Amino acid sequence: MNSVKWARQASGVTRPKRFVRFSVVAGRFVLLIAVIAASTGCTASNVPADTKSPAAGTAGQAVAARDTCVVGMITIIWNGEPRYYLTTDEGETFHLQIDEETARAVGGPVRLNRQEAIVIAEVVEGAADVLRVREIRLKEEGQSCYQ
Image (cartoon, rainbow, N blue to C red):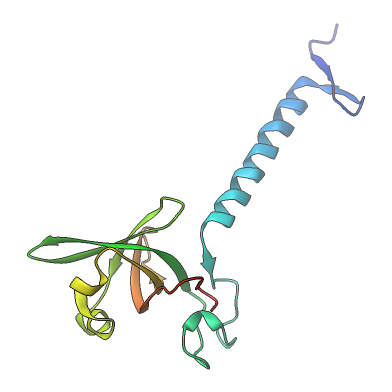
């Protein structure tokens, strides 16, 4: 006879078991993608480059399409030179590439260490956990990427 195993779904429809298993796996995959997309923070990757965005910090600045805004705690590891890391509330850690001028604009490495900050940066190609910082500012109470 027929070697296909059948399963009755919650909707009452009877389908081959392999279809039901595929549906469950596909549904979990879609859910995983949605969770990852939601947890990546406030990215500006879907915003056209000519769109003005309040994520830039100062009024009237445009955020490039490849820039992202991340909020978190800055930690500095001293090993001859400061190495900057930012950890979000969700536990994601990013290595920050900050030039000296950008760090000095907010008080330098000593001032940044163990402070909550808002970082606007470009994701370094080939390294999703490395951000090249364009702008950084210390976070104030209730402030987010879009304030």
